[in-house]
Image (cartoon, rainbow, N blue to C red; front, side, top):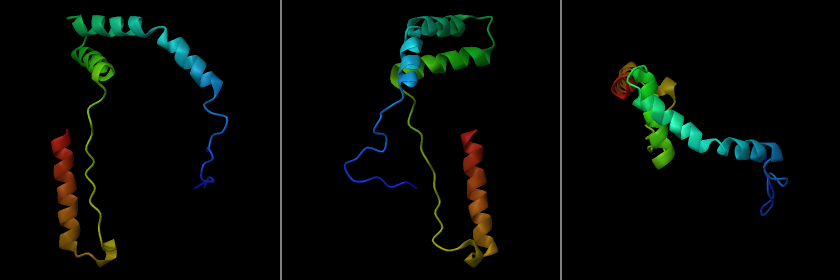
Length: 102
């Protein structure tokens, strides 16, 4: 991992100009893009997945994406030191968590 001197930017040239140009160009279409998303969302003939995606996209842009929780189980011991029962319990809890997310 690169280390930078304290008080010095790791990117002294800043963001590349091309990225800013592309963003500026894309932002010219923001209103049209939202109108298109709204049209898809309202189209009763559109597939439900497309309507849901359009709805979520509008909400994400209006209010930001909802916060996501991260479930991290950190073992304090090496896996080799754990019993089979402990390892099975960890696997079962991960499977349960995965099943409730879907």
